[in-house]
Image 1 (cartoon, rainbow, N blue to C red):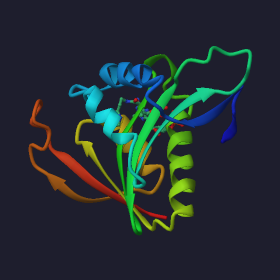
Image 2 (image 1 turned 180 degrees about the horizontal axis):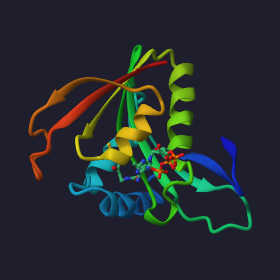
Image 3 (image 1 turned 30 degrees about the vertical axis):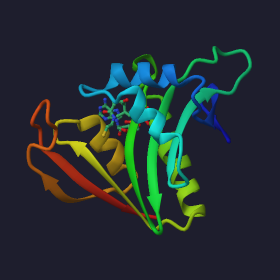
Image 4 (image 1 turned 60 degrees about the vertical axis):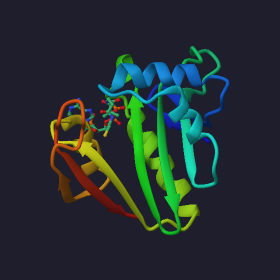
Length: 158
Ligand SMILES: CC(C)(COP(=O)(O)OP(=O)(O)OC[C@H]1O[C@@H](n2cnc3c(N)ncnc32)[C@H](O)[C@@H]1OP(=O)(O)O)[C@@H](O)C(=O)NCCC(=O)NCCS
């Protein structure tokens, strides 16, 4: 899957054990509570689990990982579990590309609703999700064990 994006193109690729280090490294740079190797391995198996990396598809650009997205789906519902973009590549529409592609894949699977949780202080992610019509539907007090920050629950209809 490829899409035109400003001066470069983006390509979504399913993650595999080979190359997982790059995703784990980006996860550690992106989250206060990173996932373990085993948690990522678990995401690679099962019909309902999806983990994708996004890379530049232009042959003249470095083939480094730009971001990743992880989500689950079951019947007509899905959950966005994780999304991150390389710190040097933010605000270039990469997360938006990942969400758009996720939505296309989920629509094909018959999914109608997507849920997610986001830290209340994560204004970048909240704004990103709002731009895809995710609506606030609930709040989990002190949800994140490390920071004890509240999580907001958001939902979008496909
Ligand atoms: C949140 C994150 C995934 C956004 O990735 P990104 O590729 O920079 O996002 P995009 O370029 O697609 O941004 C789309 C829109 O989201 C909003 N947004 C993104 N980053 C923002 C920021 N730092 N401040 C305010 N709004 C922001 C804007 O509305 C933006 O549109 P604009 O650039 O035209 O104003 C990225 O900052 C990240 O990896 N954060 C760390 C991991 C994380 O918090 N993940 C979410 C967990 S719930």
